[in-house]
Image (cartoon, rainbow, N blue to C red):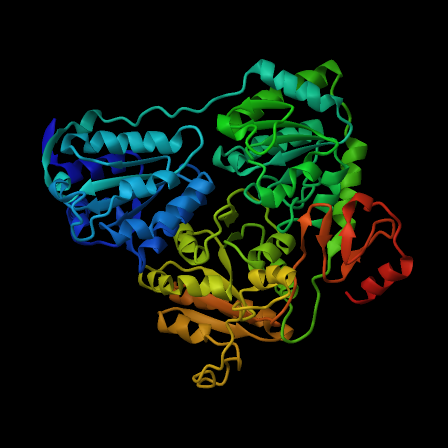
Length: 614
């Protein structure tokens, strides 16, 4: 046993739990904790420009690699409330982050002291556990329990609030015997796996829906093994994208109202059975439950018991960690194959692959200002299979999901449910802090980029290089498109005549904020692209600048003001808006299509006309 300040014990627990990086902003009420960090010198600290930014950096850090837990630190009062959005985002996507806040002395609690807010209560609804430590001797045990809670069952965030007098008190702590608590993860039984696969084997057109739980469980390899063993096509969710490579013949496309592929929706609507693993039937994936579930049976596997039946009741539910379930599924499938009872899925998989190769969206446009589809086409050509994309919400994210390609788990890092604007930039910095060698490409619309643009200075100060693609139409594009249903275009334009727009002779009149000038003012490099013939040279130059200066590089593409991106209110009624490439005349091609009739013949001349426009 050794006598030390409570905060020194806390830092030692962080070390033993594997923490080597933290993000935050110091302040008076958390200074004792920062003093402990300085004394110990074992944890790298990255100073954010906004405390919400620190929480998103921690989020990106966690998502970057299996086993990571991001830590964000702030002082009392507004620091904690600023991190609420980060905690909500992490909870919504099952991401464990640890938020540590300072607090007024215990004697001043509930007396409206300066910057004293009941953050424990405020954060309770957006964390797995929120606690204000009122006894100094509890500090190391609370930190130990925090890691146990974050890692057990469905992962999620924890907030620890530390009154300043608790931080400074001396306690006894035996560092030498400290051990992390065992992590609890439920596991599927053999009988459950046998029932699930018996139901699957009865189906004619089954699919696997692969959710983010597979990535959390680091089980993408098992998913691919199971799919190949059974021959069943895989539909990844937005959070599960990358569990199976986009060019794998059994990757059948994504399903949904927005972040989906035409072929994915069409294949899903042809299916009669769905095995969901580590997913939560999010509404942007399903649309209405009636359309999504009609004519098909469901087995749902999830680590969290209350997720099973939350959106709709499956025909069979299994509470299990995704890796544990897939181990059982593979063993049962092997036994069925050995017994000659595993059904052949060759014809069904071939029909899914045919749709994937033929039901495409057009991306090659040459006009100026640029169409966003062309930007994503060029990104596919320039970036390799190891590229990691980081993005949040908006038409930029939706179009990115429709046109980009992802080949590995954790190479699509996306806040799926909360979707806070501004998340992309700090999250990308967190990913870089977690992995110095990964090829990171962030993707933002202009408004997402502006929300936390100040965090570019963090990348410059701490040498955290990555490439940030900004597609700029000077609009809140997704909201503008949604307002079409109200016959309005109201308070969603970001355009104005910038009085400094012509200082360098490159800014675009009427597009408002000069992102290149701002990025450079924050210590980064930036390039503006206006025409298709600048693409290749600009990407190459951006890479050179990033390697030379080791700072974030912004690559801004000036888009046409209005482009409507494919989406709809149901998975069988997605409005395509733009011309559709259809390489097989037997598949339907209509701007606003009902995919229930996806096999209906199309006019040959329409196919030829679209082919001519490529």
